[in-house]
Image (cartoon, rainbow, N blue to C red; front, side):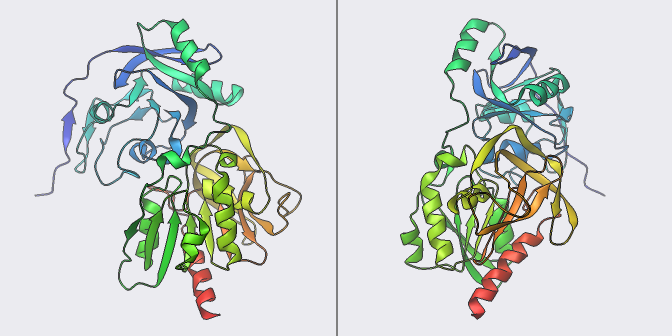
Length: 383
C-alpha cells in the first residue's frame, strides 16, 4: 500500500489579535502567529510560492520582518531536512493565511508550533497584497508586530529607536564561532574554504557533492591564517546587513584573490568581492526577495530564472565597466531593474553573482556556476 501523507491539524490554533505597524504610521490588523512578543525589524516581501521554511531559516533575513506574498503558508508543515540553518533567522513573519492543517509525509511540525517553539513572532490574516504594494511604492521600512493591547504610541517609539539597515554589520552575528568541516562526497577533488557571513546549508552541500571538502570558517578569519595552509578555492557566502559595514572581509578577500586562489561569491559575498576591488554598493528601495527574478547572462545571451534575497546592490557603470573597479567586468544583469547581478575579474580567477545558484527548493538554472568555480580550481592546479 502506498504511504499516506501525514495530515495533522494544529492542536492549539487560538485566535490572538495583533497588528503590524510601519514607521510611516500605516497599520495592518491581523491575528498573532507564533510567539507572544514584540517583533522589530525591516519589513520586506518575498514572492516565493514555496520554500517558506528555507526563507525562515535563511541567515540573510536576520533583522527583517518577512512578508510572504503567496496567500497560503504552512500547508506542508516544517521538517528537519529543509532548513538552511538550525533555527529561524527572521525577526518576524507576515502571512495572509496560516494553514491550520499541514499535510505532507515529510511534515514533522506545524508552522505556528514551530514559530512558538523558537520564539519567533508572526502575524496572519492581514492584507499582504496591500502591504506589498505599500512597500513597493514607499520602500522597505522599519516596523513592528505587536499584540493588540499594546499601545500604538509605545510601539512607534520602539520602531523609531530601532536601527536602520544601512550601516549594520549583521554578518558577524550569524557567522560560526568555530571552523567546521563538511566532507566531500566520494573522492576528494578539492579543498574549499568557505567564509561564513550567514551561509545557507545548501551551498557547502553542493560543493561537497562535487567532490569538495569544505571548511567553513568564521567571518573574522584573517587572510594570513587561510594562506598558512592555502586551499584550492575560497567561497564567500551570502549574509545579512550592509556590505559597507563588513570592512574586515574586504582585505581578506583581496589578499586571497591576489594570491591567485580562485574565489567564488554569492549575494553578500558578491558585494564584498566587488567592494574589495574598489566598487561601491547602495541600498535598493525594497530589495530583491523571491524565486522569479530574470537575469541575463551576457556572454551566452541567455536568461536564467533566479532566487534572490538582498537589500543592497553593486553600483553599475557603462557597458561592462564597474565604477571604481577597473579589474572587474559585468557578466550578469537583472532584467527587472538593470542592476548588477554578476561580475568576474579580468585577470584573476574571481567570479561572483548577486543571486542564489544553490537555491532550494529552486529554481536551479544557475547551478552551472559551481561547476565554473571547480573549473577555475582545476585550471589553477594544472598551471
